[in-house]
Length: 83
Image: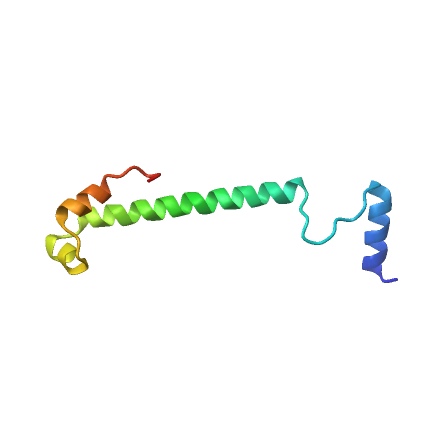
């Protein structure tokens, strides 16, 4: 048995816990996943907000080019962050 196998085997014996099958996460792994998901969600919210603010800054000609009226741009731009 190699060094890595010996280490994994003795670690299991010392902790008194069986090694986790691949694909299962412990508490720390789940916490990291939740934090990562939360950060991605916040990033999407902020990106949406930046896009809405950009609509508010566009000229009438720019809005016409993308097929949006000034009223539509204003309506979209004032929406709350979570919508």
